Length: 254
Image (cartoon, rainbow, N blue to C red):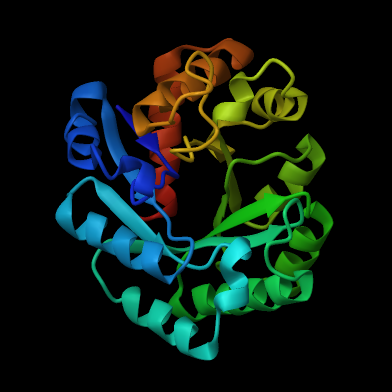
């Protein structure tokens, strides 16, 4: 059984067949899916999904794209949502310098505030880092605290950077890009970082792995991520499936 540590089943691309997709997950060896929020609406939908399905867990937070819409009031609402059963993390949060949909100073402010919320609630947090490695690392170090933990989601940095995050108590999650021919950094991370520090994900409906690249991504495709890691490490597929599942359950105390 496989665990998809990051999927957006609340996304509108699933509106026509969400029930069918979710119903078939168990038949396709998907044991658990973690569904993070990216703004208030998606956080509420994520919580709703985790309330409805026993094998879906949720996280609540504002993606850096949407951090321009955050206020102290929205932070309070996020805090209230964490009181719901099966909300296991704050996320996804972080910085995105590729699109700059929110001003960088605003992204940084609300990244810090959401880290502080995770600290207050004693929850892991899920980090989105696109072309912002240095600022992400610096902010996380400045905001570090005892017991801090979480996930660097769909990690795109170097082996050296991955090791820095691992020292801070974080897991490195690899997704569909690891299957791309030109994805040198994710492949090297998969090779060099011990399995005990890794998670797998799809980021559905985005970043679809080979051989389905170009189509909508789905949690069942996490098997291609696991298979690529197994091939790179020259270990059995089942070893990747079991160990990444154990890592996930350890992180979220399941």
